[in-house]
Image 1: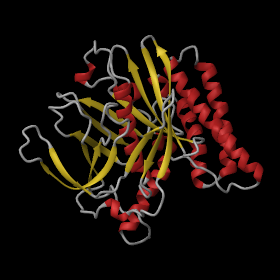
Image 2: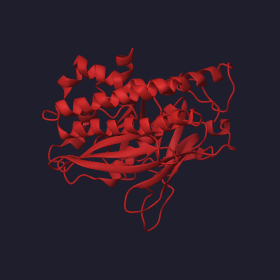
Image 3: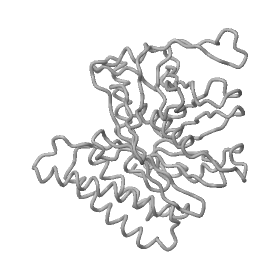
Image 4: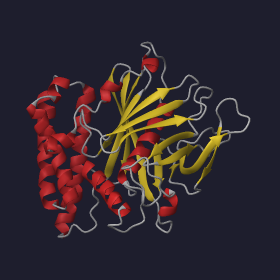
Length: 368
C-alpha cells in the first residue's frame, strides 16, 4: 500500500476526495455536489481496479469513504432540489479547524468578539479559566457515536467509532483502530469525514501502558501539534484517571465520576484545573486539585445491543480542542472495550504497530 500511496494516481485521488469537503467549507455547494459525484466515480474505479491486489483492510477504508460521499450527495441533492442550501450541515475539515484557531487569535488581540477565549498559540502566556469565558446560557454541542467493525485478516479486526451530528445523520469523524489476537491495541487514528482512506487522518493517538497498568495517551495533530495525557500514579495503579494534560497554556484533568457495582464509566468527564498539588501523606503520587467547576466534556451510554452513545461538549470549544477530546475518549473506549488476548510479539513494551495507521499522507500538503 505504501508504494501505491506514493503514486501520482493516488495523490490525484486524494485531491478528488478532499475537494468536495473544501468546496462545502467555502460555501460553493453546487460545485461541491458535482465534486462528490466525481469522488464517488473515482473511488469505485479505484476499488474495482485494485481489489485483486488491495488488502481487505484498505479496501474497506475506501468503501467507507465512498459511503460518506454518497451521504453528502443525498444531503446536498435534497437541499438543491428545494432551491436553497439554508440549514446545510457541513462536516469539519482541516480548513475549518485552522480558521477557528485564527479566530481565537484575533479574539485575543482584540480584533473580534465572542465568548471563546483559549488558544494554542502561546503556551507560556497565562490565560483566565476557559470555563469562565464560555457562554453558559448556550446548549452543549452534542454528537452521536456508534461502532462498526470488519474482519480484515485472520485474527485481526478493523474497528471504527463513527461520530455524527445530534440527529445521527451526518458523519463528521471516525476513529479507527486495529485489534489483533496476537498484539495489543497501541495506536488509533481520528479521521475527519474526508480522511477515511489510507494515509490520511486528523489526530494519531499512541496508547502507552505504564508499569502500573494504567495508560498515558500521546496525541499528535497536524493542526495543533503534540499533547500528552498522563495518569496520576501511573506506576502504581491500573486506573485511567485522573489523567492530566496541558493544552493552549491551560491544564485539564479527566475524571471518572461513575462508581458502583457496574464499574467504571464508558466516558470520563473533563474539567479545567486552577491548581494541582501533591496529596498530603501520599507516597504513591496522588494529587489533589481545584477545578473551575464547569464540565467541558461528558458522555452518556444510551444502551442497547450495539454501541450507542451521546457525547456532550461545552458550547464554545473550538474544533481543534473538540478533536483532541474526541481522540482521547475514543482511544480510551477502544482499549477498554477490546483488551488484548496476548502479546506474543512484545509490542506493548515496544509501542510498535502504530505504522498501520500512520499519518504518512498529509492531505493539506497535497492540496497545496
